[in-house]
View (cartoon, rainbow, N blue to C red):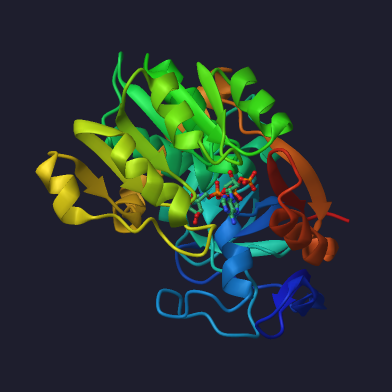
Length: 322
Ligand SMILES: NC(=O)c1ccc[n+]([C@@H]2O[C@H](COP(=O)([O-])OP(=O)(O)OC[C@H]3O[C@@H](n4cnc5c(N)ncnc54)[C@H](OP(=O)(O)O)[C@@H]3O)[C@@H](O)[C@H]2O)c1
């Protein structure tokens, strides 16, 4: 089968197509014929060699962790009811035509949800539903979303609005601002304007009850003073190269609850619940991931160039079949 492998840490060119034997499912595992593979920003950072203190993976390796596809074979003891079903799962190395997953890691893809959409939700849906739950977004909350046009940010805008919050979406450039408005943001603020924090404050009507920071760095750090006393701040994003540098004492003085990346990691049972919720919302037409580009698996390096180029409006998803 075809895989895309990172041969060494470096630029997108280190991601190359490699043929390998099909994997064989072990006990209680299934073989998934991959339809589409999710990509997320952090995969480009790991490929470049960033985050060695958090990520143990070393080249050569098959990147990626989420797929949607169809179960084509069962390992010993795997429940036969999965055979032929459409599923999504976290897997170890998803830039591949086939992947293995334990049966208890599978999420059924409901009728009416296509595999491209399921793949686009496999990670982002879990994290986004988990974040609005964790920060307890409720009707009337003023919610500031940084990185609102990103794969997960686009879901957060829709989920927060669906909970009745007033959403101020921070994004970069006219096309991405237009997207977040279309997704339902009450106000959109361009972070390329140096005075964006003041504009966000005005759009929020004073301060945010909840900040969902998917970008980190100085942008994320600048959002702490925009948080209302007693508010919640989730610093789960680091596409800028680092998480927001938050003054914990200052946050505590204002009664602000801080959440970090560790709060956005879930045990398997929770992943299944959150993903099923995201799938159900999408199947019902209430939640739509934004896919900007679908790239064939053998052009995975181009997919990484597109992600890093930050020009695509929406997510980049890999299509496994040639
Ligand atoms: N996806 C998940 O399930 C998940 C789980 C846990 C944590 N996270 C974290 O959440 C963040 C967003 O993830 P994602 O998967 O949604 O990624 P994504 O779709 O690539 O979105 C990244 C967002 O960050 C912005 N961005 C990228 N580079 C930037 C830079 N140098 N400076 C400022 N903004 C930048 C992008 O907007 P512009 O390029 O237009 O500025 C975009 O809005 C990532 O840090 C990721 O590690 C994601």
